[in-house]
Image (cartoon, rainbow, N blue to C red; front, side, top):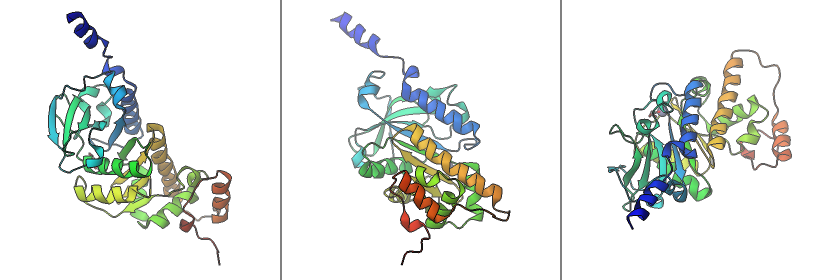
Length: 285
Ligand code: 2HA
Ligand code: ZN
């Protein structure tokens, strides 16, 4: 009997080798080096498969519990790996156990059960409401959604100061900046005005936009992206940022050439994506 118990414990794999921990490390390191996430800027949450987590952790062992400050009934029992509040993306790779945490949403829907991480007594990102509410909203439209990323990409943020914060116009301008934009984010970009961050209000507003968009601009703050995988989500933000960079590099120069709306229709149709046709200026009688 004793041997069986020892064998069970011994069978757990080293969490620091878990693909989801390594993905969090690689993603935050990339974002830091791209200059998108200064200091403690940005946060990432990743919905994990319980069976996969069980290979690494004893799911009956809750280290401590933390109130989330809101109720997420739809997410009860779900497990997320989440960046820590006040933590720097710069440091995740060298000390994942202090900068990341694995939490499970408790039976009451408003308690986070810590299963691993935040080892220096820390807790989840201050933007947990926006993350969890966005997960719930995306899961309603796409049951395979797993990842939510918040970031402060430089050119996207710069564009917020010189371009109207209107989601139709903002999306249209981004689509015009790179041929592949309408194919990568045919659903467009939702835009919120400046709001106080870290609150349930901005969380609710973000989640509402997430019913329609995988990308949401937080006016004069940053961006949220959601997707099935880390690559998809990172790629969405990366593509918006590239388009915003082209915009900012050319905004003060005379525009000689333009990707026309008819060209964008041709692209969307060639790649068979469902796009926001109402975001284009087409002469349709
Ligand atoms: O946690 O980016 O929006 C740092 C932030 C807050
Ligand atoms: Zn932020």
